[in-house]
Image 1 (cartoon, rainbow, N blue to C red):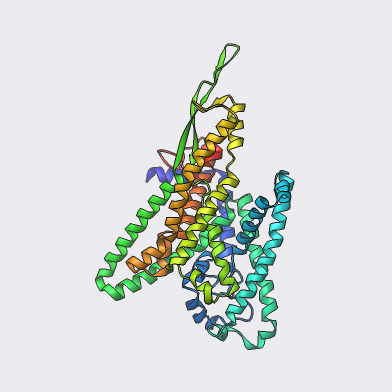
Image 2: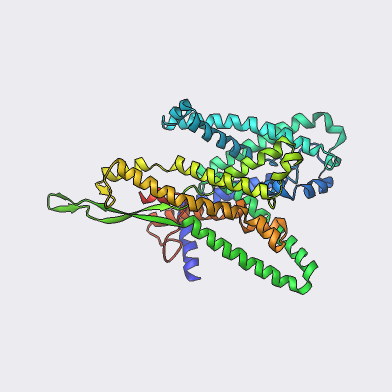
Length: 445
């Protein structure tokens, strides 16, 4: 406990880190405050049906991502998800279209162009999703909440407000990334998920006590212990690395010797972090848009995470995006060139292209089991709900997108804080070992 208090004092004593933490908390508070502002033309006293109809399936997951703003008909009802969808599309385009790949390689100017195009595409995607959301609000189950006298202005005003709201949330995420603790988009999603946790616990408690009476407390304790065990397993998955031995050749300069050291190149089992989960969820969200958030027809397979079709498609998307995103952020050729430039080599492997091929082969081998484990964790909430009968709102915290995002983002944030402490010669957050986030490979190099 004394160590923990000392660490908190050290964090607060660093002015730059303190300012980043306060800045991040203020922007997150603004985001949560906006989640309670209702759209014009909506009667907040008649949103009970909307809240009930958006607590299951894909709509329930979307509502969890935006912290309940979807079921509240808030100005942030769509949250950051349109920006995520636009980012996925732009990343795919930069891979498939040679001209876009050339622009991406132009450095800072190319990155700015792609970011600007992503923002323009976000406006288009948000307008499309806003129109689908309006259709969902106008359905028989939810239209009672609409104010009839405002009906003529409801469609244009809602599209504009939802689009501006998403752009504002996107701007908050960028500011948190630039001037806060980093990972702004992921932090916004995480805070929305955590906002639903107390309500989920309350629903599970009410359901268990209604069924088991006094035994409901025992069920809750067992479920919490299971949740802790799953979180510990996820931390091992997120921080798991394969250490590749690297030797550095000796150099004699004058009377001094340089190099000759033995080190390790840490290759993460889950180098892509939480992004494959976010990408896969955005893809599975598309059918509900095409059906106006109603989940009718073929889209019903993607509105229930206990459905076998949903589990199969979700697993395939997670595995595919894990390999895709790892290929985007991991460059074996660049690593091999850096090792060669610094007189480093892997024992038994020739420098240059053979080293790049060796690193790439190892990365492919460890990425496959990592991707399969990610997919298994992704479908875990549906399996737990079927086997243990846990309420859907609480089951989403036993794996899947929600838990993966929370674990990954928290570890990344702790790594940012620990880096600031170590830069100023303070002890890290842990007495043994170091917190590893998604930048662990880059920092190792």
